[in-house]
Figure (tube, rainbow, N blue to C red):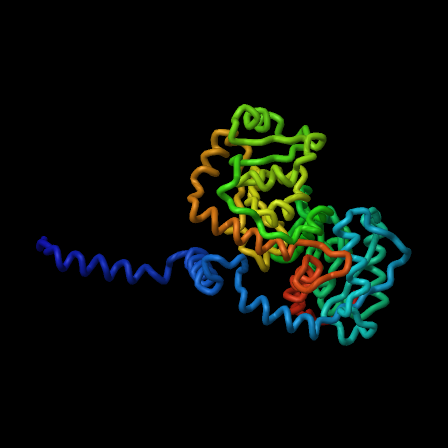
Length: 367
C-alpha cells in the first residue's frame, strides 16, 4: 500500500469534512443562526429579542388590530388580579370590533370555574351557530384561563386546548401550557404599579441574594441559605423593609412554585431575578419579546445552597451590570396600570396576540 504524505492526508480530511456538512443536524445549525442574529440585531444591552421588529410591529398593531368578542352565556368575574385587569382593560380598549368579518382574532370568554361539560357545550355552540370557528378549527380564537385548562377526550375542548391561544397567569405550575402558542400574563404586584425611580448603584448592595419566603416552599434549601450570611431571608411577616431588602441585594430569589408576584418590583429596583426551579420552563411573560436568558437566571433547587451560591458568584461584574440594566428596562413592559399606558403589560400581551393573528385556514367541513 502506498504511503499517504501529510499534505495529501490533510487535503483528503478537509474534503471529507466538507462532504459531511449537508448531514449536520438542522436544529444545531438553526440554533446557531438564531443566536447570532439575536445578538447582532439586539445589541449587548438590549432586553429585546428584536427591537426593530418590536417597535415597528407594535405601531402596526395599535393602528390595525381588531378583536371580536363572543357574548358569554352568563356574566362572571376573574378572581385573579392580573386576569381581571387584562379582561377589564380589553373591554375598554380600542381593539374591539362589532363586525366579526373585520376581526383578526376572536375572544371566547368563560368563567374559570366552568365545568368541562359546559365548556364543551360552549365550543359546540360556536361551531354550530357561528361560521368563524370552523374556518380554522379555533386557531384564530383565544381565551383566558388563569391556571390553564388540561386536555380532554371531548373533541370540542380538545380543539380549544390544542388550537386556540390560551392566556394564563405566570407561573402555570400545573403544566397546562403549550409553548409558542400560549401566553402568560405578568403577575400583578400592587407595589410595582408605583415604581418609577431608577435603580440605585449596585455597589451599595449588601447581600448576594434576597428571598421573601412564604414559610413552606423548599424548606431544606431555605434552611441552608439561612446559615449563610451572604443571603437574606425574610418571611411574609418580616417583610416590612421589603423594598430596602431588594435594593440591598444583587439577586432576588423566587421559587417558581411560590410567590413570584414581586419579580417585576425586584427588576424595577435593580435586583436581578433568579427563578429556582428543577425543570426547564417556557411560560415566562413576554417570551416573544424579551431575552429572558440575559435578564435573569434559572437555578435548580436540587443543587442546594452551595450550588446556588456558586452560580451567582460565577456571574462576572460586567455581565451582572448588563443583566441589571436590562432587567430594569424590561420591567416597564411588565407593569399593569389601572388605565393602560403605551408598551405596558396590557399592550404587550395584546402585542403577543397580534403576533399570533396569522393562522392556517382549514377547508370548511361538515360535521
